[in-house]
Length: 240
Ligand SMILES: NC(=O)c1ccc[n+]([C@@H]2O[C@H](COP(=O)([O-])OP(=O)(O)OC[C@H]3O[C@@H](n4cnc5c(N)ncnc54)[C@H](OP(=O)(O)O)[C@@H]3O)[C@@H](O)[C@H]2O)c1
Image (cartoon, rainbow, N blue to C red; front, side):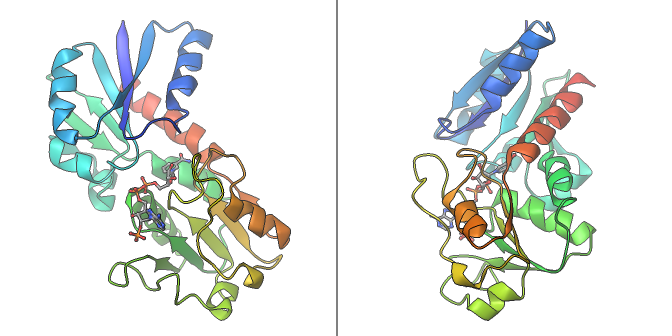
């Protein structure tokens, strides 16, 4: 039986196992999906050795960037972004990294490409968002807790800055399951009906960030379309 799996920590929030298990059942595929909840990425090689039928992995928080040093090869997009969410175990055992978040993001952002954007967070998912916006000539500014990593810190965000960025994308884990009563620290009063708020989080389906946007009449998009599109793109890579 072919095996696939997810590497991350913690994995309680993840939908991938349920998604692929249901897909394998529905499509009559003799495959199994396993969760590898590891607190140290150096065990990745042991996982591969101990699971000779493992053909591919999804990679999630917090390893999308750190996984790169454990791989043998990157496809050109993953190499450009420097973030990987899909690993293919090649027939000779070498590990090749891909980024299918791009495909998921393009599907969602095609519904919301307008004006300039604020991207909250500077991690692996943020890098994929930056790549897609750059590709579509959408200008953006980065918001980070760390003044050296972003264009603005959260404290520096004025209502004017928020008003002049009609697309706001949450690429942080703030508001995710177990932290559902939290939202990125923004002047939400500056959100209007002209805004689109996109949260990459899919669990819960409506985060507090999106609720604040909806309260102000903004258009809101969650991470579910992206989740499904990136998973199917990973499946195509593993099946090639
Ligand atoms: N829908 C999908 O298919 C999909 C795909 C990928 C990711 N995601 C979601 O996107 C989110 C980010 O994923 P990721 O892989 O980029 O995670 P990550 O690598 O851990 O990075 C998240 C970034 O968020 C910021 N951050 C972290 N903790 C924070 C806090 N307490 N307050 C404010 N900012 C914080 C940090 O940026 P600074 O240090 O610059 O502040 C960090 O670099 C997760 O919720 C993940 O589930 C969804």
